[in-house]
Image (cartoon, rainbow, N blue to C red; front, side):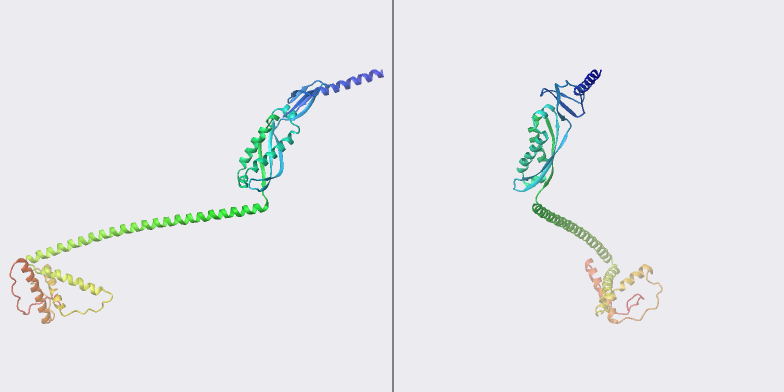
Amino acid sequence: MLGIGYVVGALVLFAFILVFKAIKTVPQGNEYTVERFGRFTRTLGPGLHIITPFIDRVGPRINMMETVLEVPRQDVITKDNAMVSVDGVVFFQVLEAPSAAYEVTDLHGAIQYLTMTNIRTVMGSLDLDELLSQRDRINGAILGVVDEATSHWGIKVTRVEIKDIDPPRDLVDSMARQMKAERDKRATILDAEGDKQSDILKAEGNKQAAILAAEGRREAAYREAEARERQAQAEGKATRDVSAAIEGGDMQAINYFIAQKYIDALRALADAPNQKILFMPVEAAGTIGALGGIAEIVREAFGGSGHAARPAAPAAPSRGSEASGERSQYRVSERAASRAGTTTPAPPPQSAMPRSPWDPV
């Protein structure tokens, strides 16, 4: 009985081992290769699978998800003989598990070394300035070369990224000075452009101001000429009216006209700030005597025929002043008569005449 128990136990153990060898579970995102007597036969996808125990066995287990591979730092000499330190990363995904398992030994190491060599090749053909400013171009060039080289390995290289580019310290200082000089140059150019634009705008403003000032002076001159023309027309009309009055025998008009001119001249002399005392010449007495015509006009306008009651007359003026006024009236009458073509009567005798309270003293 004891021997039979050992046999049953051995059979149970063998059956357990047989089941364990035959049933295989593949996790999601992975694929297993199956080898029969060392030769690849098929691939097991995610899930539960049964293989022939002791005849088939599971070969390389391949990760089908996208994988990130670090590219170690290395020194690269650029086209202009500048040495820089570069590192990066590679993103790839296995598309065919058998090829990734049997076409290359150490898939990760192969991708890593292939990427490093192509980084040196691509970056060595560029200048330092291009190396620092054209990372997209460098990444695209490296990606194209590495993806083409690894295509028969059953993988797809999706991205190649350069992480850091570190030039030597002295080269960094030189680049900083160069950048500062370039920025100073740009600032100087911008300042010069600003001064140029400012001068142009100022010149345009001065030009417009000069044009407007010239137009203003032209308009003012036109207005002033028009005013003088109107004033001349008014004076001509006044002169014609006075001449018509003289021709009609009204001598008071010319007396008023002359007296008004003399009054304006005297007012101008009196209003001058540097003329406070007026010295009248002897001949001015005749002029002042001619102002009696204004009083005569006032009497005719407000006193009717001139025979209204008058206030007491002031003291009689000097004979010279009265004679001068009569001579002035005679000359005016003579000119008016010469215009009318008549003979001027002889001047009246210098006799005393009744005086008006408005006559000058």
